Length: 316
Image 1 (cartoon, rainbow, N blue to C red):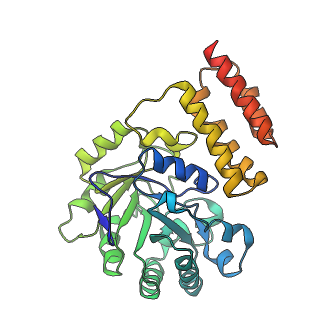
Image 2: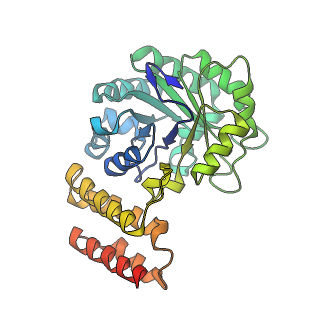
């Protein structure tokens, strides 16, 4: 499968862009364990053009994680175009347009999945961004606003006509948020459409390599994107089993990378979320208090101590 000039190989697995999750340390580890493509946290177009420091910092990428995409969202056409130009200067391998985020603070203001209620504007933004940058432009969206408006089959053709080079489809509507089950049947329908020539990337409820393999077989997608199942689990992309010690070592490494590449405060903040969500510690009795301690830890030494205590408890 190719996007632009980059060949991602057969049946590639992609790491979904997620706010407060896909920081640089996590992306680098996912890449190491087999993710063919990773994305930064999605960034606000408005914040980018206002030069908000915390947003600009999200554009920092490393050659060690390539190929890497940067995803932007917004509701204003000119802001999205200007933000795309700023992103291009950061040197990613592609720019992705977020038309799928369902959360109220994004979709409720007409951005992200909110664009599913204004298709002409979505298409206008897409055309304008494609024309404004040299990098490949891709989009990510959902099946529709709700189950009365399942528009993805027609929308996919319209987005392709705007010049995008790949489309990611999350198998839920905006009204579903992240509830219920992802419906891949319409994703498969889009892929089977003979008028669709761009790669179709399926997303939603994939929690293992086996489930990804089944999605490739059943729906014929060109790539599978994994989102929430990656929390605290960058090795999910690997077909090789890891020991408990190896997994905890990886989590400690993620902390060190984030502190080095971001800063002490934000590096710890980002890593704490992964540590609290990782499936590694599910076997610890009464883990709730330990989890609270993780989320309150303010120093690297404190987090490492908690991780080592968890290691000892699991091996006892």
